[in-house]
Length: 308
Image (cartoon, rainbow, N blue to C red; front, side):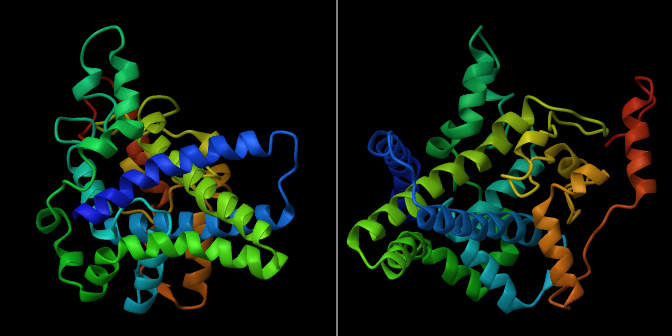
């Protein structure tokens, strides 16, 4: 990342946290306004879907195809989550899949600081959740891990202008708050909740996929990593918390595979809707037979299971 982009990224980690603390102090005895709730929830969903559908399932794993225009829309949506330039995000995540829970994984809780000492697991969780942002984020070789995006002029432009999109994601709630309330106070509270606090919650939910979903939770498929499914995080993460399913079938557009999981995978709800109206196509889905085969590998006696 450029110096400007790295600065924006560090500010995006620290400032929303400070704003959240300020919000708790300022509004301790008061209720947050419905306008603030609506703006925060709406912009949270836009940014979260931009990351889960756009950055992750579409750009990183090519789980479906769409028009270049819609791919740019999703890339801009994801950039409003302020998790770094889109090309860097994709390169980091592809590197994660290339070295999952092994040396070279930028944010595994099971390598590096987690390998020794009584506090090893805690250090590993810290590194996977937030520590990696200061040491590993944006360092994956873009030309090696994301050559397709490096060759796309539109994606290069969106990635290069990440800091302006990030600032725009703060200006938008301010303007919406002012337009709805007609007051500077309404604009400022909308900025606080719809801007800083929204970024705070979205980033911590996303980082929890790196940390919690590689440490706690359930597993049922044969995979060579520690990925897990964590049901309580499913809706907030737009389905990404079915992370073990994702590592079992990385190219799958659907993270939720069981009926209850499908009901808690909002990203797939949107993909299904876009497919019905012809805006996306060639959507990758995993057949029940293939799921059963992978699950059988996990339950086979040691030495007889096929490699995941």
